[in-house]
Length: 279
Image (cartoon, rainbow, N blue to C red; front, top):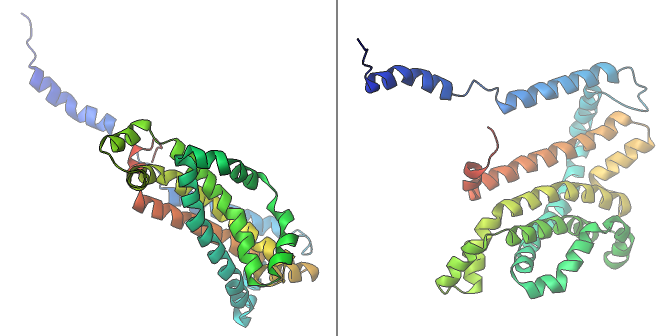
């Protein structure tokens, strides 16, 4: 006698097993991994850093103590304010100018042929060599620092936006043309949203260059801000105090990077859904 198996009953019996297999295993949250990595790094630095000559290096507890001394006297906050004003103005101008230039360069062949070469050359050129010339033009004050930050951060934004426009599928543009949409509408409604991930990537890359430019400007122009603390502490062989602005700049760059990532998730939420990255 042949046993008859009900297909519905079989599927019902196997359903829990299939669901259990489909569920991903418990993953460790990213913030736990990051916190653990940071704890290990700081712990190793604290242990081994105490054996280094204070002239050649320092360790986290000494840097924290130096931070408290600078913060208590108010010197740190004055220096931070002096550094952040040209940083945010130059970086903001780089975004406001770099994104439209990149969009226009990637969209129109004539513009790309006319200025694309200069954008590429500007990105590759060692802009630090132009600082003495900028000092002659703009002096040693606030304007030259803004110019240095702007020049070192605008080209990554331009190039990433430019490449993003060239990567937009041609079918999307043809859809806009089929509805007789003008070039300005196509640029604003089709190309700009499709290019947003590239734009945000360029803005992220520009953060690091802008931070470096801020310190370079303070080294080569009027010595002020966080750069002044670095130079003064290095001349006095006070390594712990010298590390304070360096750590602050690193934390600032990481914080801005996370902030830009949050803005990207807000303005381009579809990017996370189509990305192939494992969560």
